[in-house]
Image (tube, rainbow, N blue to C red; front, side, top):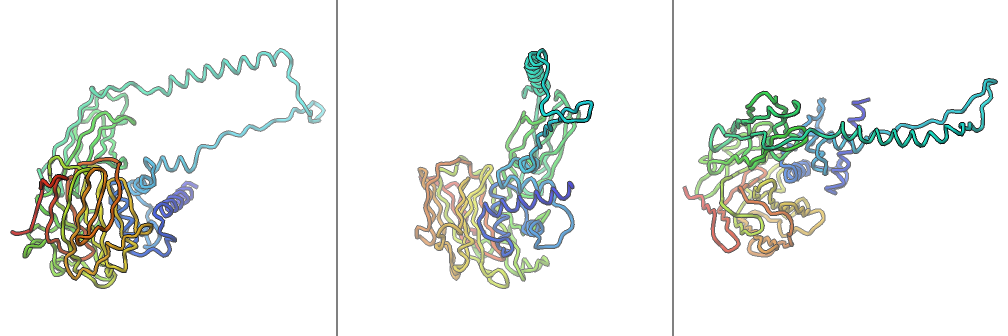
Length: 435
């Protein structure tokens, strides 16, 4: 019964996800749709579910094991729930007990039509009910009242084993000895599903981070966050990697910078026994560092990119330009002209889908480098492609600090130049890849 209910729950979750993204019947989804869904889930939850994992969940790939708790939590968060348990409780609410009226049977076996209570009992019953309700209320309040927790009684810090680069182990030092019980957790990043239960009597916990990024680590007692701090895993310059679970395939920066361009060649990728057909993997280039005080409400970002792989199932040449921010991201998708329906823009907390908006200006043949400029000034966001305004919109939502720059190509691709400036034109980062 439990397995059946979980299957029903997962089916409902998938249905809600399909309704949210609005891509039609999932039976007709392509590999690219699952790539796009992976990106959207990451943008919302900061957790990467690989396209292969998603295809297993949607039954496109045969797999007998059940999804992990982390995967289920991430899916639930994508549709607005705190975690999978909250989604389950919403879907299967506790049923209320049903009161059954019992007929009164006389000694002769006949059922009485109406049972009249004695007059005295009819007077006492309301008093008993009120007294019982009041007593129950105060007792339940006393039982439900959580123990008072003073955040000052706890300490929580962390240190990285290496200053920059991945993989990187982080050592968390904590003191939770004054916790009322052993419900002590360390949450490793923004994702609540990455909570690890630790002992209140211990003082250290370690974890490995395989991807760079800006994370918010938390010490949680019961359901209360008592301490939190930012944890930044930065890169040593540009980090090229090929996405795969659970550990990406890393390359050195010098493998990717040649002739004033950033990008791994097809030969370099194939030398690592990575197949490019029928569908090429996504290759990412990340540069995460402290750019200073530059935020998503006041910046100008300029770059030139070119997708150089158009074979097999990679004919759409999907190319993603991203800015990593604290707890969120900015994502701009380019593609071949015939695939613009699958393009999209994600800006901090605003999702603009090519399924519902005209993003044809983001389609290119990639015969030459494509210039892209994104500016956010005074609540107005403008994106230019090859010096022409491609899309603009207002953004009055959350503001986040910019922490990194990423590029993502399906197959091979090149970056010619990159510049990040404040709204007044003051350059905070620039790279022409002249090494």
